[in-house]
Length: 160
Picture 1 (cartoon, rainbow, N blue to C red):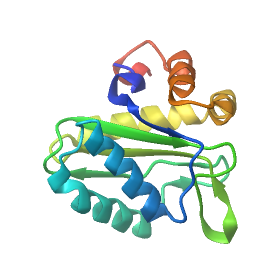
Picture 2 (picture 1 turned 135 degrees about the horizontal axis):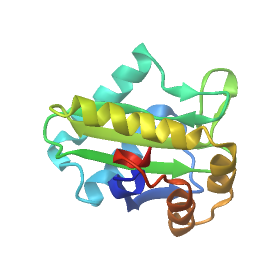
Picture 3 (picture 1 turned 180 degrees about the horizontal axis):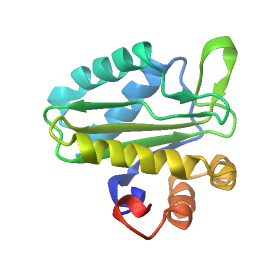
């Protein structure tokens, strides 16, 4: 299974920024609802859970401009992912440092191992400077999808 097997192309946002992490998480969670990957009734719980987790331990990798906020919650089947990419910034963290790639991951509360494997796969994908550069140059969700497919591995679960 590849990262792109989980990420729904309709849950990719390009060229948009939000004033805060919470606004970013909410917008991406709403994309997952629209894509049928997150039940509407757990939207607020999901946003609260992600933001609480981020306050405890931020997933922002400021040195590479990537954040992978995530939560495991009831009401979700499997693993779901939404992605926001902007050449400048999706949102900024402390001291105005830009985060230009955000992948929101929401998983079933019962799938801890799969959740961690997917987070690891995303992290490995985003460690590639070439992949990040190509993602930031993308101008549409379709272009982001093509970049991800090109960098998404082909071996093992989640391609890594």
